[in-house]
Image 1 (cartoon, one colour):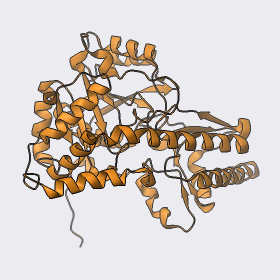
Image 2 (cartoon, rainbow, N blue to C red; image 1 turned 90 degrees about the horizontal axis):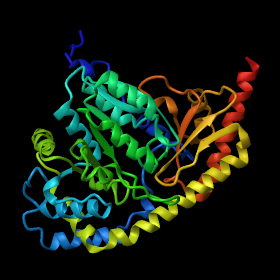
Image 3 (cartoon, helix red, strand yellow; image 1 turned 90 degrees about the vertical axis):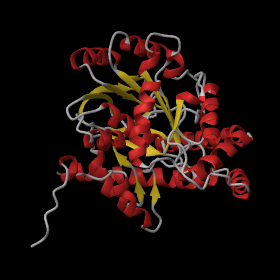
Image 4 (cartoon, rainbow, N blue to C red; image 1 turned 45 degrees about the horizontal axis):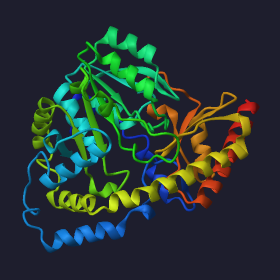
Length: 403
C-alpha cells in the first residue's frame, strides 16, 4: 500500500501555475510563445553585468559569507537611490532586499495574514499573488478592473464591508491587462485609505518600462507627507529591467513592517546571496542601468505596436484590445462568444501559445479574455504568431458554428 502523506491543508490539493504548465510546449518545434511574461534575453546588458561580476570577483571581500538579512548595505543604498529617483524619497534604512518582489509579497503575507483574513485584489490580477493568498488561507475579495485600474466605486464598498488587512495592486502596466491608474484615480485611491486599517501593497516591477503616454507618480510617491504614507508598502524588482537570474528586488515600508518581514526572511532564506547583491549594487552604481533602460523600453514599444497592428490587420473589429503605454502585456477579448480556454489547444496545434484570462481571476472569470506577452518574440515571430492565432480563432468559430 502506498504511503499516505499528511500535507498541510493548503497544499493537499495544490495546483501549479497555469502559465508554467505551458512550459512543456516550448520544446515543440517552431512554437511561438506569447505566454510567459519574461524579459527578452537579447536585451540584457551582458557586457555591463560582466564588468560588475568581474569587479566583485577580483575583490569579493565578505560577499562569499553570510550577509545581513536586511540586505547588502551597498545594494540597500542603491535601491534607496533608485526609489528616490522614482520620486519616493527613501533612505537605506527604509529598504530591505528581497529575492525578487515575489518574496516581498510572500513575506508580507506571513507578517499580516492569518487564515480567514481578507485581502482585496483586482479582477483580473497576477496569478502568483492569488496562489500565495490561497496558500496563506486568505479570504480573497475582488474588485472589477478596467482600462484605468480598479473600479473605485466598487472598491469603496468593499473596503467598508470587508475591512481588509491588505489591498494588492499593480498600478502601472498591470499584469495581466497592461492598464495604468491615472493620476486622478491614484489620488482618489489614497483618499479611500483614510481612516482605514488597510495596508496597500504597490507592486511595481514594470513601471520603468514606459514606451508611450505621460508618466504618473507611484502611489508611494504620492502618499508621502500624507496621513496614509505609513499604509503604503512599495515592492519592485530587477527581474524585468535587468535580469531575472539575479533574483533580486526590494521592499520599501514602515520600520514596523520591515522588522517583521526581516524575521520572516530569516526563516525563509536567511539572506539573499551577498555575492549577487554586490554585483547588482556595482551595476546600478556604474551608470549602465540608466543608460541601457531606454533601449529596452524602446524595443518593447516597437514589439507592442507591431503586435497590435498585426492583430488589428487579422481580426479587425472582432477583437477588443487594451493598448498599454508600457510594460510587457497586451490584454485581449474575443468576440462572438468564443472561449479563450477552448482556443488554447487549437492555438498550440497552430504552434502559438498565450494565456487564457481565466488564470488571472479569483472569481467571476471572463471566458473570452486572454493575455499576450510581446517581449520574448522577434518582429517576425510576432507577425507569424498573430497569423497563427487568427487561424486558430477561425477554426474555433467554425467548430462552434457546427454544433
